[in-house]
Length: 225
Image 1: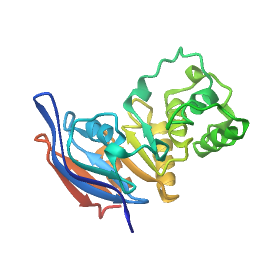
Image 2: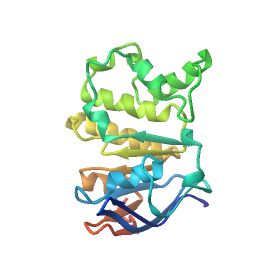
Image 3: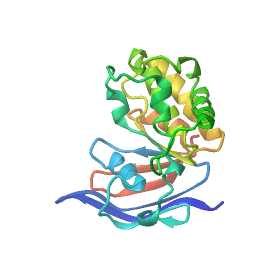
Image 4: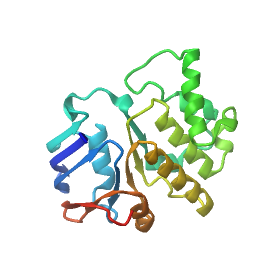
């Protein structure tokens, strides 16, 4: 199967502080990569580099056959950041409005009635359609996180990045979100995910990237899944 993401000798530093050093791995469509490492080992940095949120790296990142520096098809990529867990609960927007705002990652566009089906589809995928007209701030932490996953799905991406998507939510919501993520992967979604619960992540992922404090990494096939 053809690789849709290739990272070769990726090296990155914050000023004089090395973050990643010659990290290499590749993923095919439908893979689930678990990114493991202590705090400060570059897990979030790696995701942001692939997503194009950080620049100034050495090495090579290839997405769907294109160099990251030339890649413009951002609708193919979905992202659930750690910041989703510190969302301003006073923000005056409904669930549907939050998801709709992520429809056009490739550039501004007018919202059309036909796009409503994409919003409904994304909310249905996370079992949150019935909350569409509810204010986002009125939901529980676990429900909010499912809405942010819907927002990452609404542009119908081929690959989704999740940076500790279950941190800050209760145990019941964690199980619900984990089952949802597993379901998305079984339906063919390529997933890259970090998680504070390493054991849970190794149960989900078929490939693992283990980052060390010196910025290097080991890329492994996970036989435990």
